[in-house]
Image (cartoon, rainbow over all chains, first blue to last red; front, side, top):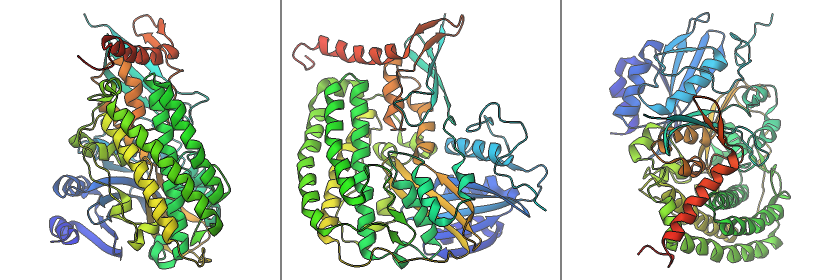
Length: 144
Length: 404
């Protein structure tokens, strides 16, 4: 069974949207509540390598994409979640699953102000100590 | 009673291009914990990229790192070309070869730079001087191919900016042929020298499980037996055309010795790859002259000297990206120092921290401070001295240069 089918089978109806952009780029989305379970399945169950995660401030909420690399086939599986609460964005941390996510979540926390619940060490990574509290550089300002 | 001492390393030194700050917690000789503080060089390039148009960003990301200054623009153009269905769809063949030649030359120069520094740290200044001496012709080759010794400004969406002169190819091949024996000499010298073995073997070990847990990439992962290499897994450049014969270098011990071996063998491979590319490079266009960038999301990644470098682009069809996410390989590798350095001795720490090749060479700015009364007991130079003394001690114990 190839990786696509294994993911589709393992995550089942958790998958809200499935989008194969090209032979090596597969994007799919799950509900923000399911992120921990889904990442656990991808990383621990299927042995995919966590490559990076990217957060973005969209009009409808904060979107996080977790990029997983399936190195045997050179494919990237990008797991997309949308945090709809723009005032107090929160999501479960995946750092308890594997250490490699720690810095990435710290970066998204300071840049976008997303709170990662259960993160072992949520403190600033890149921003200076005297950077004002509550000011998130990658958030979009309302321009009207 | 344990006597816990904090050893801060960093963050600034004119020698190093990426300031990092390591705070070692030591008990006697032993490192018990480590805090890694980064961000001293955070320039907000992801944010800046949102205000630049696609053509400018290639120059912008080239300035992320001066050592792997072709990896970032390459990963970036691959991300944008992913919007067109991939590099193979639009980039002319000749440009693919030129891209790979630059990328592999960069691997040689970066690994030689690291090898020199590692030699310097253990008190083998000859290795340092020689490695950097042999790095010079590599920079000369860069000048012949790109016009610059650093920051090549060669990558553009759809191709490269400057053509390789056919009359330069014999000279380039001659320089490569002259370089190969020196790389082989390093391989022999490091393999045979018992003192180097004693310093590097079973030091700063990262097991395969730890490597997977920390998601490390590149030579750091391959030295621990994790079989990943983007050049093979998701081919780009000349590797797309299946005309190049090469192997992924894999070791299993995960110590500094394995990391050194991976890098030296990769240099040999890179020379081989460039030679084949120079033989097989076809004539033709070097640029696809791309005008409009389609809407969508693209991911591009290359095997930089330090590992997978990945860029993500979200485009809304205008001339600027909505989001540009950059993840450099050291971001994953440096974090793993937390396990590699802990449990080792303080005299090995500088070497272990440098073994992931974090663009880091600041040991002069080290201070050892007693946690209880903040009294400085050592300065930075002392820590390098400590590392060298260890080498000298090993040498003294072996009058014949070998263990009895």
